[in-house]
Image (cartoon, rainbow, N blue to C red):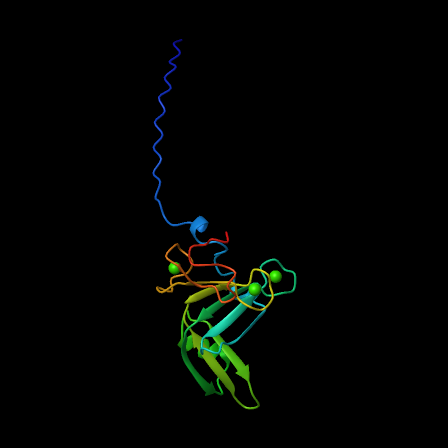
Length: 153
Ligand SMILES: [Ca+2]
Ligand SMILES: [Ca+2]
Ligand SMILES: [Ca+2]
């Protein structure tokens, strides 16, 4: 018996450097739509969805989507949804009809209310609306908690 102890280990690390969370504090992928706290139209006309990421009963994460179209219809949400595959459909029911909002598949803005006081503290814009994948950019800090160069981190 011969024992060959040949331990040649070639480890090749292919590191694809992509922007990661360290450059975008708080930025996190949107949870499933079904886990939302509530939704509404923002003053800018975009569809806001609020989440409670730490489950303390207070909203801390909000996404904003462009409304693709909105209309009254007496069709069911299932029927409307079938007309807009892959797009989220929201609706407000009225007596005989509902008012439907069809939004983009992914958000344009991601907003965080770090201290949960109702004023957003940091906003990211995802111009390509392709979910959180590293190409989001700092947009503004409505509360002033953060500055452009992240001095407060
Ligand atoms: Ca919370
Ligand atoms: Ca705040
Ligand atoms: Ca993106």
